[in-house]
Image 1 (cartoon, rainbow, N blue to C red):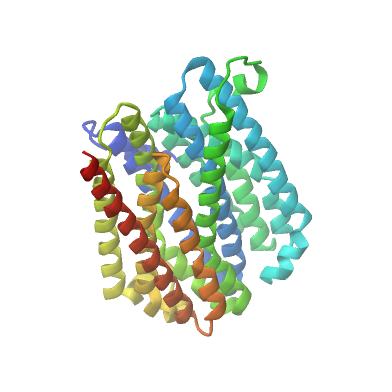
Image 2: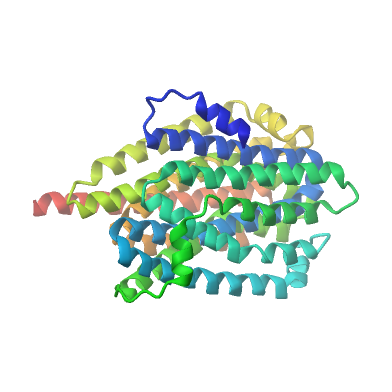
Amino acid sequence: MKIASSLIAKIPKKLSPEQLFMVTILLVNGGNYLYNLLLGRLLGPEEFSDAAILITLLLILSFVGMTFQIVTAKYAVLFEENRLLAFTKLIIKYAAILGILCGVAIIYFYQDLQTIFHTKTASMFYIFGFGIPLYFMMSVNRGLYQGQNILNKLATTYQTEMASRLLLTMGALFLFPNVPSSIIVALGILFSFVFGVFPFQKILFKGFSTDVVTEIDVRSITTFFALTAFYELTQIIINNSDIILVKHYFDNHDAGLYASLALIGRVVYFVAWMFVMLLLPKVIKMKKDNQDTLPILLKYVGYIATLSSLIVGFTALFPEFVVNTMFGSEYVSISFLLWKYALATSLFAVANIFAYYYLSLNQYFPVVVSAILGTTQIGLIMLNHDTLEQVVHMQIIAMVILLVFQLCFFFYKNRMTKIKS
């Protein structure tokens, strides 16, 4: 974390808070990628397949946590003072209840999870379950910073989480070589949640202890929360079902190779989240101020499309170089699929920008339909999984359908707006 802070300090002061936040998130994503790459190199394909399941569960958890973050960010923009305090108390209650339920479910079924995913240990799921309530609380904390546009502290929470997970996990792997690697990875994830809570907002303590009498529209908040949760659930399915299904249908060696492919190919999606976090509060505030939100959508779509094109092109030209550099020679056999996986992820990232844009405008039809279309990839993979290449092809088909729908809806809405005006 000190290294990241020193690098940030050297950045010219002319950068805006948004630009500085983007730089820090890029550094955090780089640290998270380093974490995955080191695990892949140290553990080898078979052990890495077990670690990848935990990493996938962490990604799943991050999308559930993102529901709390998005909802909190929206109402942190709309509410002030007592109304914000009343909302904070409500969202903390939701986070605590859902976090405990999810955690207890994983702890209770930890042995069944071992059977489903063919892992060497069951205890890694048991350990992982204890961190879920804390993670949801961390997401509420981040949502408040995001909605209030306190980007420096928001970035710090990501830095502390990333740095602690990286340092604790790698240190423990070297210091305790006889301990199963999956246990060490699980503990590293758990302790990173503790560090990721800081800096902690005082308003969360007030939400715990203060009796608030201010009335807020709980029904509209609950509706937005439910719709956001529904969409985030579909994001979980779209983003992680392939790794889970491959782990189920293929042996550990192939599953490990595929996990490395997924981690490299998803780099564009991780960066896209940075733009989503900046887009949401801006669109909500612009709508509140009766400003045109179309230009900012096109701006961020342009960013993601450009970035995606560069990544897909590079992975198509130098696939073996990328895989060998990141994971080593043991994984090179999967390199021929890299550009195709990057393409599928890029299509999803662009489609996702449209979905979150409409979600922030309280237009839920494209969110619901895109969620249904996106989940078609599960059925496609279940019906066609003879080879890893076939699995990737099914994802490309599903993401093309999803993006075409989003574009059609966008042009339709834009045309209707022009007709009315």
